[in-house]
Image (tube, rainbow, N blue to C red; front, side):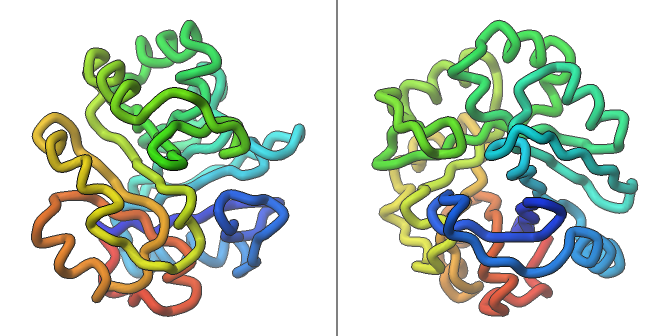
Length: 226
């Protein structure tokens, strides 16, 4: 499944280069994209609230029931997830909270475990947090075992060195996931260039893929979306 991503900052759709909020390109307004994707019946849409990560002011939005919306970005409190649940979001993407507030993380799991997606953003396969600004000493493999023990089995893996670059996916970038594909469902994010780049990888790996800037720059055709 190829899933479009809408990264939202100050009500505009943007793409960052390697997660840097000072290096972004603007591609239009959220409502324009949401209405278009709904009109062509896109099944799943990934939304990231960059305002909730990089600014004090929190941003909220409402969607309809025409697609499955998964939302991430600054989801640090159970009450915030409850709010988005009421606003018809179906899945919730958690990242930094896993490392910064385990009590709140487990509280969220007690209410929404079946609706939780884990996002692991990595630099040289070490976890980054705080909007990718902090590189931890926690390896991907270590946190994977922790999540597996919690029976969390859908993970978004992002190589932040490739995010927003259009450098293309390379099998060596995530071949280490090969021994885990029967334990967990993975979604790959960061660096996708075009569908040709995906063709051989899709045949070998049953992953989902999140696409952003390749859509906005028309190197990925809409017809390939989920």
